[in-house]
Structure formats: C-alpha cells, structure tokens
Image (cartoon, rainbow, N blue to C red; front, side):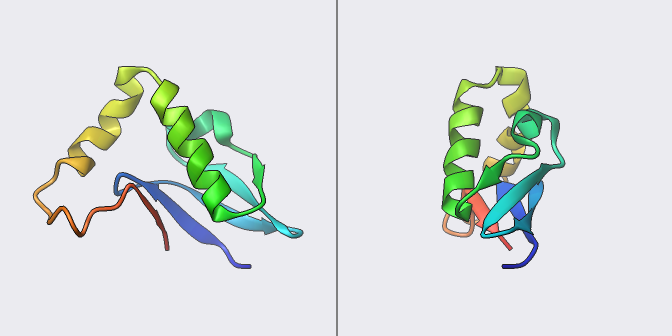
Length: 84
C-alpha cells in the first residue's frame, strides 16, 4: 500500500495513507470533509462512500465539481474517480 491522491469529477478531494491493512482518507476539499479520517478496506469502498456522500450533499457543495465534470476535455478522458 502507498499514498494515493483521490479525485472526484477530476478534482483532487483527498489522499489515502496506509493504515494497517486499510486505507485512511485525509480530505482536502470541504465537500468531503465529513469523510476525513475514515478508514476503508479498499479504494473502491472509499469511492462508493464519496459518491454516496456527494449524492446527499447540498448543491453549493457540488458546484466545485460542476466545472471539472463539464470541462472541454474529451468525455472519454474524464472519470468520476481517479486514484493516482
């Protein structure tokens, strides 16, 4: 396991750091701050948690991602999640 940057709609929202056999999420964007410090078994579990959280979040919290999701890049280049 290694540190990873986690993106949502092309925007970096946090990093993961190894936490035993799990990943700990460190949020760097306010819309996902409620997930800060959470421990996840897999990156996929974290991605599901972020997606569910964003689905329930206020529209103003989602605005940061609107521009990134609708940028001029090719649709095939964009992904909701990216762990780099």
